[in-house]
Length: 347
Image: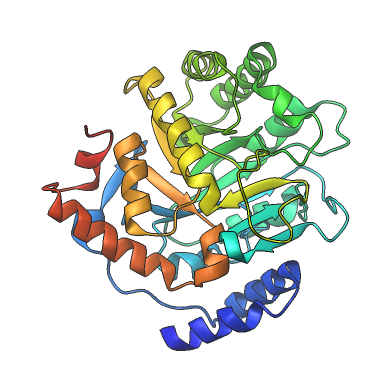
């Protein structure tokens, strides 16, 4: 079956990237995805009170509309983050807006939070079974009050999602990254915390802030203190980058966020910076350039309690998650660790 999925992945590379993604979603909905076996016990871990069978999560962007979180859990991910969802449906930016950089094992996207909106997303989450499913929430491009959009998403999805990620770091919605500045972030997280505290306690879920890897000096320190002040559980490091390291692929000059292998070093460096500042006061999730057990392990050592990936699936297919887990389990044992948590931030 893994051979079949590998062949399917190579066949999809003959299509436009966005068309290929749509076809993959339809195949998963039709029950054509892989089914993983039981995870190695060494990979079991807990993150912000969430019990995970393994620390390898699916990053948002793949399942924007909460359509295939079940199949992706069955494929072996320890948790799945859906979205980004906005209150109102929106088409996103004009196509083409998704580009494979095959030679660089990277992707550039300028999707612009294209999604079906909050109501279909909520309806699907309401029917979910067991497993950890996160909701990545955002604001509509033309919103007059973007903070109100985040609050609306939190309220509507309360009790439906296992956790929430507040996405203020996509480079593809004009002005969104300005929410990372201290005053704007304080207002956003303050209003979200006020809304959270007024919601039923039995639906309480961890909240994370997702940040960019392109932060200036002093911004990480301000973000950590603001996140702590408003009682969030942690930070996801990081979103895509607007930086352009040396790239070989034809599409390397396209505008948008760069993800995949070239993001690995930059995002891990930023993760270690946040870990040093947070000093154990926050849970960190590492994302950016994860395509092997060694890459996942590097994020753990840099301070992440769990990791997320997406871009590498474009090149490796769904069998990748199983390989990463096998490699990570072997590395943990070889390094003398008895559990994932023992490796987090280890020197």
